[in-house]
Length: 417
Image 1 (tube, rainbow, N blue to C red):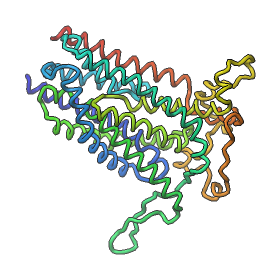
Image 2: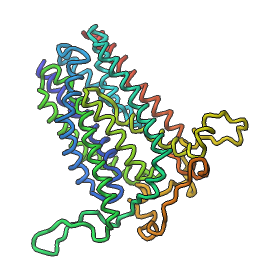
Image 3: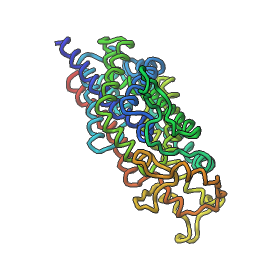
Image 4: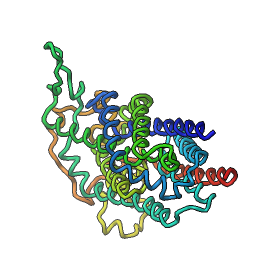
């Protein structure tokens, strides 16, 4: 019976890792695939390599925390391990059904918390630290995004441009007897620099995803001794890689071709900020959500861009005329679908479909950034980055899924243990 439960646990862990790979690969490499820098198979390969590096190095600390820190390792019996993994997989299913990037780390921790509450073995001091990080990290992402959007983003946007490539950046020259890899001859030096940024940050996100998510798939199995930490990392990365090479093709297509309201520059900024926050937390062994931190940075970036229409004095002064006051919240969060409301600069979807400004168009543009307080609010609302209705739905599910995981796990283990 115990051996059967161990086998079931391994299968459920592989299923969880498979789903993590399917979603995380698209988030990390969607811009690179959409802008035709790499193909989907190359993206999956690079993601697998850097996810392994993240899991093997920084991710070990998270595995230790989740396998023996939140509750003692002895509590992870074969039944408990399967139960925790079940609720983690269930959260992925619920989030996928609603099209929301789930916080797998938060839900996995919630299942372990339910086990700790049912057995009276919860490390409350450590949980206080983890929950505090869950509150502070998104606020940091929000604040950094707001500062960049208000003071730095316009300058970056005026000086950096990402042109479309009709073919992949790396080409295979088959003219000789031995195929050779060479750069796209139509790519300019600016294209190469921009491509290196997009690809480098994608690999960085893969590293961060491996560091934070490997524990979600295998921590209970490490806790009950079914696998060692090294074996757990290999199992998790293998399952994540399998998801990256299979179901991630759909998420890569969705992120690469379907995102039309988030410029590549903005995507690079929020990816870097989100991945850095999660990598730091993973180094200290704190499981946290890349999706939550990244999304909060997107909200902050949008608000910061919209807030450039007024000065700090005007922001701090309550408006006397509602009709004359710029609606910064709506401007930052409301998304538009009309042609006039497209964001400035090429987006991931435009690059993938061959639309958007070409090299000649961009070379004629001279960097010009209006000072704060003189930007057109209509232009800023057209460059909005988020939809308030979608934001509400995402935040609700971020809170709901870990809560359901805690309650369901507690009820299960209270009855069985």
